[in-house]
Image (cartoon, helix red, strand yellow):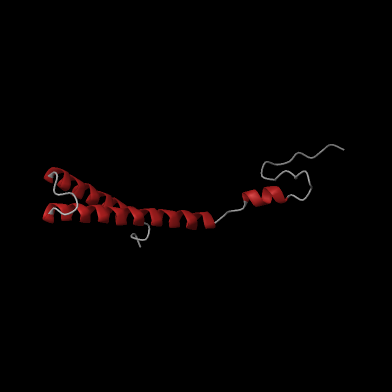
Length: 99
C-alpha cells in the first residue's frame, strides 16, 4: 500500500501518537491581549504620574524658587513644556482614555 499524502492543513502526528503538541500550539490565547493592554495601561499611567511630578517641581521652582533655587528660568520653562508634552502623550496612548 502506498502512504496517503498529507494535506498542508492537517497537522502531522506527534511522535507519541497523541497529537496534542500541535493542537496546543495552534490554539488562540486571548489572555495575551488582556495582559498587553494591562501593561500599556500601567506604563502610560506611570508616564502621566512622573510627568505630573516633573511639572509640579519645575512650576514650584519657577514660582517660589524652592527645590532648585531657580537656577535657570529657561530650563524651568523647558522642563515644564517637556513634562506637559509627556503627560499629553501618556494620556493619548492610554487605552482606557479612548473609551
